[in-house]
Length: 140
Image (cartoon, rainbow, N blue to C red; front, side, top):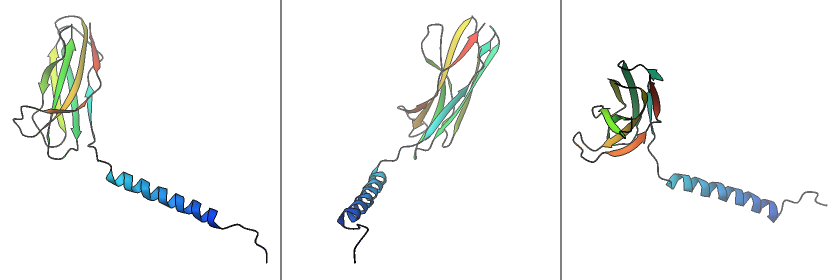
């Protein structure tokens, strides 16, 4: 009787290599550290008039365990550099904040929101977790 199919050591070695690679990949995924996920979003009008109220809203959250979250809106405009406009109260879940103000002159204002992690309500060294994209408001 003659064999037409070769199912010898070569085929078994290929299967063994594939099973070994899958096992090694699953061990590597199981030992990889888990990273907290979160996001921050900010909305603002594209244009505003001088003297009229500009309302900027932001919300964000993070699933890091054991931390309180505080969300702050920062502004940069007219060569002043970034500074905090307002911050939310520390919260355990998602944080929301609204900043409202008026510009006294024409130009571009930039805003972004930053989410901080706190160990307590009076934490003096908050950890920056996430930041939003920068939004521009053209004051005309």
